[in-house]
View 1 (cartoon, one colour):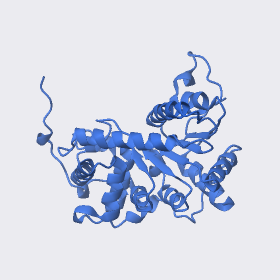
View 2 (spheres, helix red, strand yellow; view 1 turned 180 degrees about the vertical axis):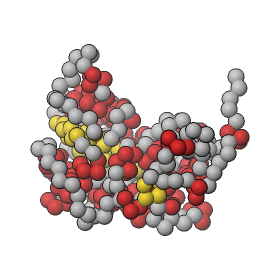
View 3 (cartoon, one colour; view 1 turned 60 degrees about the vertical axis):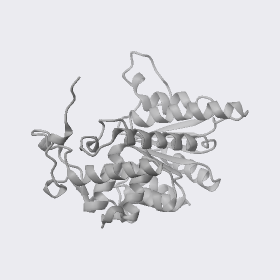
View 4 (cartoon, helix red, strand yellow; view 1 turned 90 degrees about the horizontal axis):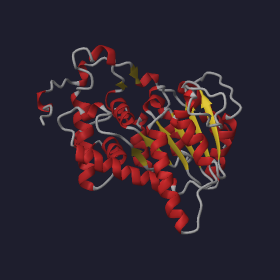
Length: 322
């Protein structure tokens, strides 16, 4: 059966692309933030601080929208303080982080560029990210570590003038696991002729095992899922099953931990699964993160709101109470 030939693609330089976000849209640590009140947010901050003081896991899993709402410096600062112990992302996070570090801007306008197939077909993003992944594959390291190493070390004589806002570079510099959990065809870098799907699959598979290792240490810790309706809950669920399976063979448990789900969606009752006829019954973050995996000793919370408001307020609650 025939397949499309990516060598026929017209690939354009990033300098020709319009961007909807720049480095100026990223919060500074002392920025004035919108007021947000939620009775559960202080409790989540308290659990995070407690986990940090007891040297337990604080795992931060997120979709790209969390970064796109200007939160990179908050996340980096929490890593530098030793609060966040693992960052888990999707492929879009790696792309936005790379572009922001490289040119100080990101976020193309899909509606404009999809009309004639320009969407996603950008040279530097596709070539440099895939080159980092291929090198990571050869060095037997994961996807996330490969991107962090590229930016932090300015590999291949590529300069990153805005590396200070790179979450991936910070994680690599600090020795904090940063993992990318992706599927082929999810991201614009998969379009580029340099994309090696074997390398992408291997490095992302490596990251899955790294993530499962962190989940295996989740007892008395905190797992946060921010803005990921599919990747976050599914990768977390499978990782927790692996971890519990191995722990059970040693007579151990992974049951006493806190989960929190941050999303724009609101629930009337986030701790009741409901019926198959209910619209939220099939919402994976609710079913998996807030209910099923914490039934035997854990606790869960749901925070509804824009990430440009909820994340800065969570950051302030943590840092002012430490």
